[in-house]
Image 1 (cartoon, rainbow, N blue to C red):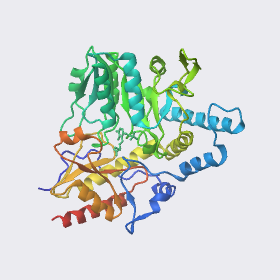
Image 2: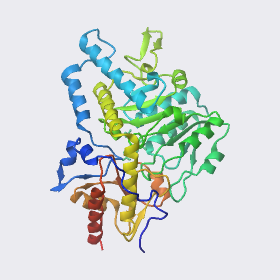
Image 3: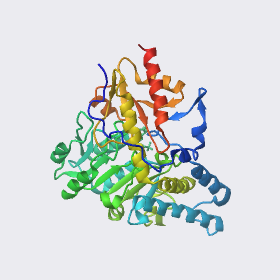
Image 4: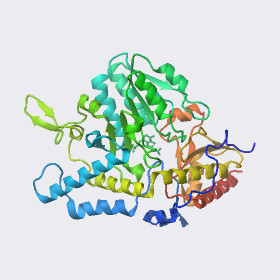
Length: 423
Ligand code: C6P
């Protein structure tokens, strides 16, 4: 059997986008010049985490060298400097996703924490026994397990929108799942295991016609295409800084102000209160009500720098560049015998997940690593997706703004060598 791409490749290979200076961008990422097992690094594990540009590394260093102090607490100059930089970063995030107000931007540790926050706080405000939460079959565990816990706690029921053989979101099935007991829809923007892009506008419009709010897991989207939360009209949008060239340990929950106002706090302690007596406490205004304790100040500031960097490269240009990469990679692997791409639905993000007959994904990943090529192998924290496609694991190459066609050539050559070893 030749090949492989089970359906037409999602984006045809077109002439490369003009005016996108990938080599200049690469120069901003010191780690890309490193070698692994004596080979130049080819980093294709951007779905797991992205590399950091000099501007982000400098922002974090500069914070500790010039500003380090706690925020919202001190009257001294350093504390004010740190507070200003932290709040400027919040406003940077607001502009990046076009939120209406900085009150709607809550700093969290990452996507996982953002979704847990909504599950617990929205859950306490709105979800009762017999109510329903709708998710899709292509969710990351972070957008499944928090809802399972909420269902256990409240007696609510989890309903799952199935996906088709290409990994596509089955809209008609979704329509049937929405009902009078649906309290929330929680869907991924881009599937980390398949690359499928959820038809968010339609999903959100339909949910809103039933007066149901929608949470979007934007972990795999925010650094790859422009996100406008007002245009989408989503109610919550969660993402991790580290998948958008910022440090680990910082992420964002966007929530519409009215919903965040209605929700009780998540964690409690310092900075999230207005008044405390032994009898009762009252909560700080948004967004501080959801930011208990000393936050990741340096991380937030570096996230601001990362978003500046991404915006500087241009989200449309990044999206065009990555569309070229996924089309090129899909075409390059299409004549490898026994290779099956998992996730071929259009539109598709720059994620190539595949199996190779007779080889376990971990063996492929290990051999690729010896050629300097970093990919992810396994279930990608999306076990239900693996089950849906009846595979134990896949190998996944996931691309970012700095990847090139020649890196894809190295990856494909390494894949062919891996295949020879198992022939
Ligand atoms: N996916 C991957 O290799 P955190 O860990 O909180 O930053 O992100 C969790 C998460 C949530 N949703 C989606 C769609 C994701 O892809 C991820 C993280 C990584 O695919 C690590 S499992």
